[in-house]
Length: 425
Image 1 (cartoon, rainbow, N blue to C red):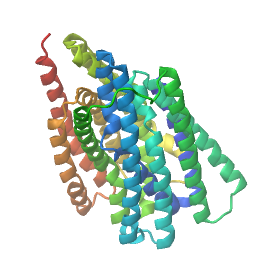
Image 2: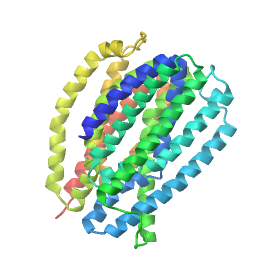
Image 3: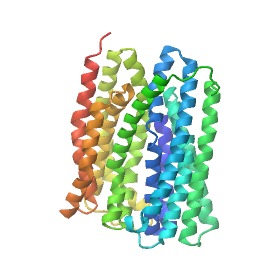
Image 4: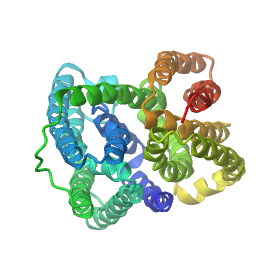
């Protein structure tokens, strides 16, 4: 069901991209992509507290500590509010000292408007940052399908609102278009998150009125684990989302369009598979706590068999992608040679390593994984610029990711099998 809902949200996203590209034009759509990419960064700057929920709550459920669960969730909300306020202040100071227009090589809007647009969206992103906790809660209680259902409802609602915006305000200035789209995205996302948060507490019959104080040592331990999750999340984000900023900085925002189109196209199968795999995070935690070695190895074996079929499906997707793009995008877009093939291969490697990384995340064994990610972050940007200097254009950012993913494919599964084999009843 998680994969089904992700498929629905993915299809809605595709239509939204086509509409926004036509409505905003290449340059302003590139600017919106830069802003929205920042949104994904904001959501990950939570010191990993939301990721910790998916690992710690199955442990507390296993131990039957219901009062501590309620106290733990309440603490998570408090910490998230503090982080959201701090992030907003940091971004205000950042825009005060940094000229975003020059930094992102944006020559078609004023510095004042660009700074305002970024801050305006950061405000919405910060309040959604807190309301977004419900997604991790659903996964932690092994009801991950509702997390993805909320994403689907949000994406469909935004699509409908974009259609209405285009219908009623077709000829307004590009600045007003970007502001209205920001309002639609920010307000509607917040309302959906609040609705599903209320739904979660009703479904689980939980309240935040707790009689047990969260132990300081427990909070310290979960923050320490949470910080590790944040390092993991931000590292992965830098590796895959820094591409957009590298392209904007070296070339110009309009050059993001072919990369964005191909990347979003292959995110569709990846998002479906990612959503279908997401509940395994907490299930791995449960099986590891119970020392269920046989079940864990069986899960690995099933996935390895399934990956053969996934390879065939992605190969077919690579083959039909040029046709899909020609139907999807109204105006012809010049796609660099091999960009589709390279992105398809990276997608396959991401699916494979994501499955095994969910195991490491689920059991909280992250030290070796973090070291691998930090090394990858250090070499990612220089490697991208190296291939740019060799004349590979926007393909350079994908080639650098491909090299990094090949290393991950060898190291991460090896570590997982090593950890499972030493489990003793």
